[in-house]
Length: 234
Image (cartoon, rainbow, N blue to C red):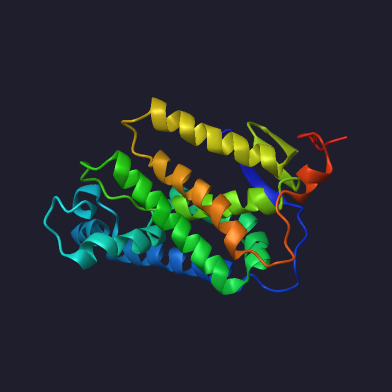
């Protein structure tokens, strides 16, 4: 990844982002539990609760629950510490602003629906795969898509290679999104589910228009200025 976000300066509410924090807690708890279980039992757990495209498409002869329940549960499973840490960092930075813009229950809906959309697109492009899809990346991509629509001009402090700089959110998320598309076409054999990221990002950007509070305006700063300098350092 070229840009790793560290923090943002978008306006924050005094209200705690309860859903964001709860999602993080559940996801981390699930990871710790799997570490404790380990071995064959953990593998069976992941194969059952992760999205396995061959199972999801019905080719494996599974019942309806086993086919469709993983479209939700896979978001709370991760493949390692790095996978978990990066996802939780992104959720921590972008989740609170989106939750405040939608309210708690609508934010939960946006998160879950974005994750589902990501899994659906992944299955569509990897229908024959027997490898389980796990991770909150699709759902968090949806949160990023929503953030892009409500806080495009927020300053994001990012680690760019070896330097920490501030860049407009619209450019951080746009670069991230383009990288997902590039990898989806150039790295078809890699384990990362690039299409899940793309599906989640698009879903979140669309859903925020339906789920935001009425007083939240979309792309407000972009509408006000003909061009916004992506680099905020002066």
